[in-house]
Length: 356
Ligand code: SF4
Image 1: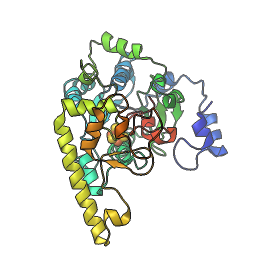
Image 2 (image 1 turned 180 degrees about the horizontal axis):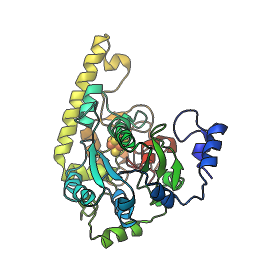
Image 3 (image 1 turned 90 degrees about the vertical axis):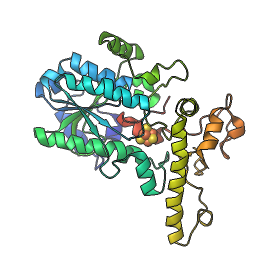
Image 4 (image 1 turned 45 degrees about the vertical axis):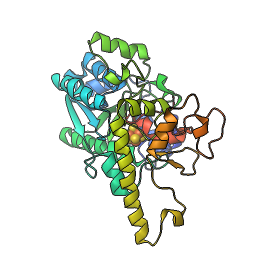
């Protein structure tokens, strides 16, 4: 059976999907019981594997090599750099991920946004706004677009559509548990990929640990910190960070908090100038000054970084620092979306999945 998302028209390939002709086309072309490994191998399709330095994408890359895909298929490991990762992540990518992926027959590729080559901070200043949970342009412009452009290059080189391999595991979250091992096409764009493939979909954390151990590889140091270890990799911080992640950054990397303070000033300056050109101000428009973190109550409530850091140090709940409007008892993570529809970027395996 094809994915319910695909069938209902909410899922794959963006245009005209879900209508009966397209569903029939894929149902006639692919049997859902098809052995996807064999199909990809036999056809020698190019594989573009999205990697981040995280434990799951590393496990997927190790598995592709163990299973011989680097011998049978052209394999490209692609990493979209937001230029907003932690120093430990950059060290791990430079010292471990890149050399490993270049050591076999596959190859490692770093891609960045063409429009914002200096990454997230540059994009925020140029836009005069930060991304938010509802306007999550960061995933799109800094990850999806550069990866799509890279996949198109690979397709052109090989004269066929690629397979996009994604290191997603069902056990990670409710949203991911609804995903299939493979689907025709790509949620990233029409006519981009032959398949979206999630070879680790049934893996549990023990499988991820085992493949690292078998290959004598340690995961990124952020997972192994004695104090405040990270559970996931991603932007440092992500706009949807958990309280303990913000606390870890403020203690271990106070320079990033300083950077954020300056960035909030710069973005607010740009926004002020833009409003002034129209004879408006934040006050006249009823808007808050832009900040990196915005609450999930839908009012656009913004907290400056110093207030966020202060809240991150509070004991359980920190209710005294809750956003106005976020009144539900026990609701202590104001930046994490509650609605599955809002977790879109995680579906690509490129951004933090906040379904946890
Ligand atoms: S990790 Fe977070 S901040 Fe970074 S691109 Fe994804 S959603 Fe945006």
